[in-house]
Amino acid sequence: MHTDEPPTTRVLYLAGWGRSGSTLAEGMLDQVPGLVGVGEIKFLWERGLLQNRRCSCGTPLRSCEFWVEVLHEAFGRIPDDDELRELDEASRRFRTRHLPGLVLRPTRPPGADELRWYYRALADLYRAVAKVSGADVVVDSSKFPSYLTALLQAPGLDVRVAHIVRDPRAVAYSWQRHKKDPDAPNGELMPRMHPASTALYWSAWNLATERITRRAGLPYLRFRYEDLVAAPDATLRAVTRLGGVPAAAVPVGDRGEVFVRPTHQVSGNPVRFRSGAVHLRLDDEWTRGMAPRHRRLTGAFTVPLRRRYGYRDS
Image 1: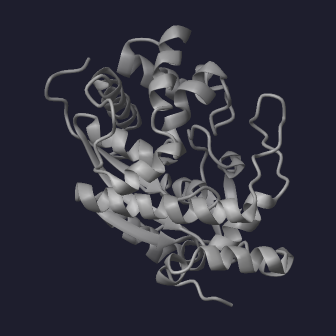
Image 2 (image 1 turned 60 degrees about the vertical axis):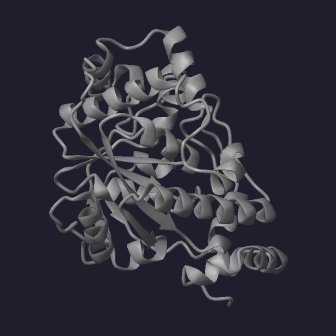
């Protein structure tokens, strides 16, 4: 039950543009004692509960023992469909189209006062995740800079931002791929995007994340997907330090595989359904398969942020 002074819940927010490796990073962080990765909570209401898509453990979310216990802890029951639609509608107010305003204006979102009920619901939800899991830190890979501003309004949340970035040319190539979404209701393909649009979103999304975090004075760490794959132990140690959890080594096998137990992630990349030995391999297919014109276009649109993140022109 919500109180006027809720206990503090630590949230490690994985920010970054889509196809940058956040689902992989969260799955690895979930293996660290004291951390629990629960996917893109922003989409819990629609994809998780209204559409009843699968939890990453493989069970439809309404039947997943973990999420059923979390929802009963937070709200006393699974909210009915009208309540879920109301929660989803509130969540939709923190969308991509608000990026320009977030870059230009302070972090307090419009309509903050009328959404106090929603912020209380978020606080209760994250608190329940921490209690049911027994974790010290809830890892949320929702990524949206706009949704980060919602978390900043929720009472009792101690938010830290782990900002994952990836070479924008690799990201643009990934957004062009034809990939089936195994969790979509009718087996649709995952969304695709033209490289020019990806480049613009990549720049605006990452800049907005930096600006919101800086203005709010949040603990912040930026790390690269490429470093996560090349040096997983050192990279994850830095992220866990940000979360305030004593660093624990993630076991990496001789052939570069990590051993991942089933998680309870909501939404996200299909990689979340993988468990057991997951091989860490740099996905650099873009260096061979990306059309030269798209490579030049993406590279040009993302300067100078790309260079500041350490990605060369070649």
